[in-house]
Length: 157
Length: 266
Image (cartoon, rainbow over all chains, first blue to last red; front, side, top):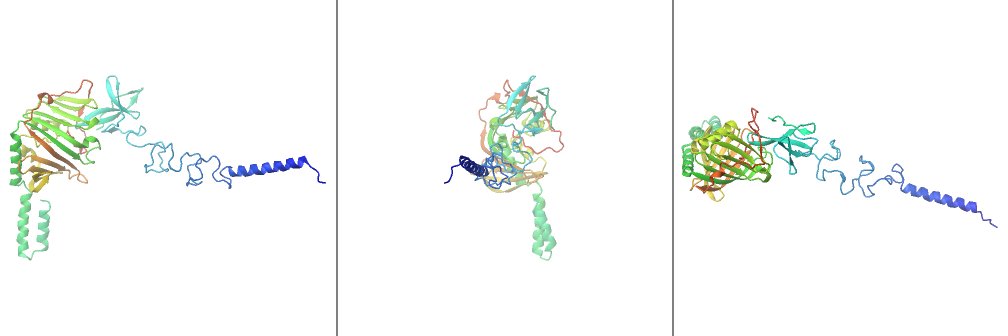
């Protein structure tokens, strides 16, 4: 007569759990494991065509529909591509505060008029501009900020 | 003018045996020499336009202009309507509506005012002038630009249009809109001017400047839509002053020896 061994059954159940657990782990394991090259932390989804060799990394929130990513303000029509050294947050353009022009002939739509010591400056994208007329043309010249206050810049040309 | 002389010379050099051709070439050379000057019929046409405009004491014209992108900066002001009002002898007003970039020039013979009403900045300088021609010259010399269409509205249109011109001729009849015109070509160093003058009314209908010294030969094209002779004009238009909250801006002339060819309108 076959004897009933609870220990044997428990071992079997444990082995079964370990087996099932391993399979589940394999299914959602880290990306370096051959069973699941993307890994559970990969938010791209299985339909993402970029592949594991994509240099943007697994935490990149860009999806299939927006190859640049939701955090990229450039827009899908920006032709620079991901290899552009200026970074994804660089919106580029004449009114980019990180690259303000020394002077310009127009002002962006969102400028504001601010007065310091009775002198009016045109504030846009973090920079202050002072107006001159040169050859009858309005020239908005970048003003340096000293102690938090813009100062009248020299004429640009 | 630029084509006739080289063609004639080349023909003389390469086909000297045919006497008819040689004769034609010699004639062509004479023609080239004639075109290279101011042709009498061109001068007569300018005179007739000048006489027509000189009869009016007050003139108001509405034009549509288009500036080549390489000459402007890409703003609204590079193209659009211009309204010029002139009262002889020495009052001038021009406005270019362009939304936020609207520009206005006024002179009452005593002061020159340049205003950007929407941007709330302006310049005002004393500038005493006895005539509109003197006003245009003074603005050019002291401030660095010529008021728009100043040549056309000058008391002596022919002299103003032919200033610095080395050659002038009538190119041919052409239509501007529905008006049959005669097209004049005025050549000077670094620039050519095409002027279309109405065949019947002798009023200028279109003026196109081509800046030949710059690559791509950019143009400034002005089409005059409407002429008003002796309209009722409020005299305060010429002595217009900026709003109280407008800021005064320094009026400078460029220090560059060869400034970028920005055309100021107005």
